[in-house]
Image (tube, rainbow, N blue to C red; front, side, top):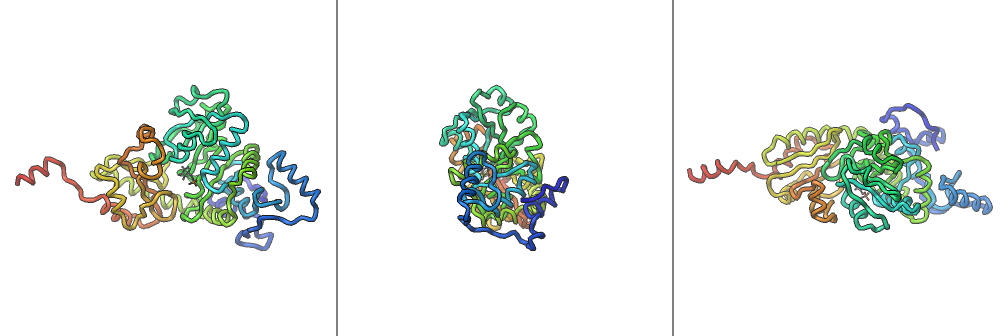
Length: 391
Ligand SMILES: *Cc1c(COP(=O)(O)O)cnc(C)c1O
């Protein structure tokens, strides 16, 4: 749809990619195409287009035949996200889990059912692999064990960095090297292309829950895989056959979300860095996890009851999900990672006292005031308490 324009900065791509044809068409906002079907008086021509799609998975020239094959509004978002991640293509899905499912189905259909993965992953990604719902078999390992875990039928290596919910970071370049010719899938939901572009470090597949930062306002559910065109073609064929398509209105909202992504991520990250600093200095907090690359996510372990903190917030919203303009907090052991077996969860560093906070764009002092109240009384050390009781 667009002529690729080399060497535009990320901030420029964020507001222009996927929209480069609009001015020539006399438009400013991108049109939303809600068609489920597309008329054609040339059924021989349609037959040829369907054959071409079935054979190659390349996007049909001209209008789609049927909305499950593609949608022009969604295609604008795909073009823009590929540009931001520095990949040839991107394929959008109805959710992050639909996107991951499509990747597993592509590899499984090639007889490559074995997946090597590093914990922690997002709870439902862990569950999908562990339960083998799509016929995959997983070997969990640490980054140093990846090369040894590879088998002839390994179709995928999957990692998250920074990981959900502990914010553990990996050296993606080293991980990609350990994968050899096996595709590395890096879930880049937390970092976004603003902070990290895994394809530049050797990841063949970059996955996003676009529900999070790409949409950015807590009102659209979506997933996307940024990758080379060869893999994208297989993903489009799976999407066509299994139906996990993204709705055009969601495609519109995502394209709109991308235009403010760099500004949102930088502003929220500045808030998060400041809150991480204050939490680290607070005696009610045992440990703070904040990534070296920055970002708007914080994880911290409280010395007291994490459920009391969730029950105590007023400005901050106690809710799962992340990446919205407003601040959300949740208890991974109860919610986002509940579906992971408790031993596996703890083994991955997800302590029962861990809270995960997605920092938004509010004033940082207002956020701190709310957290400070929710953390409860600053309990004095035991000796002092005893002394006070005696006195
Ligand atoms: C939320 C999330 C997912 C799943 O995405 P959905 O859009 O909820 O299906 C995958 N990976 C990470 C890191 C997530 O945070």
